[in-house]
Amino acid sequence: MRSSGEPLYLQIAKILREEIENNYEPGDGLEPEGKIAERFRVNRHTLRRAIDELVDQGKLERRPGVGVFVFLHPLKYELHKETRLTRNLRRMGVKGDRTFIKRQLKPASQIEAKYLQIPKGRLVTRLESLVYADKIPFCISTHCFTHKSHKEIYSLFKTGSMHEFIKKKYNIRLSRKRSMISALLATGEDAALLRIPLNRPILLVQTVNVDVETKKPVEYVISRYRADRVDLTVNF
Image (cartoon, rainbow, N blue to C red; front, side, top):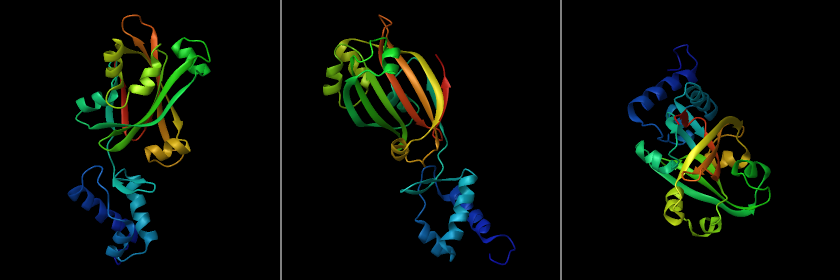
């Protein structure tokens, strides 16, 4: 292998690429870099260059503090009037899970007041959760509610579909009125939760959900998606 004239790291990259295509599934983790380096009898610097080559080719991805994984193709996720994220993932054949990060009762910020059509400073409920798609971080969502019984959402809702809970508890069915999509760079906290490097682009989706009957805003949602994990389609 060393006598071919081609740089050693490129030779290793070709072998690894063939192994990945024949023996691995998207999302599978590679063995530790130290073991791979030992197998090829090269130093870690050479091995890292080979892996970096495959990262650049879109075959592998590094997850800081976790390891190197076979690249997952983005999920083609539709934004439509149906607002239940984890249920929509299940319809796509993807296992969706939610872990709550924060629960807060706080005065509405200026932007929350604007989209919820309430006075700035009125008490609102904020629930922030990390959503997984097939056990890999998919997005962070901050839900802000203004309904008169929002304190019960704060104290009683634990798991499952948030909007199904609202429908059963208050007989309110929510529908997406508008979504605003933009891009930004991941902050320290978001990057850590989404398992991506600092300053990696993420997609920001701001959504207003209204009561189907009254058309009044009930929920304002800020979702931060891993840009490498999702292709968003708007279909209202």
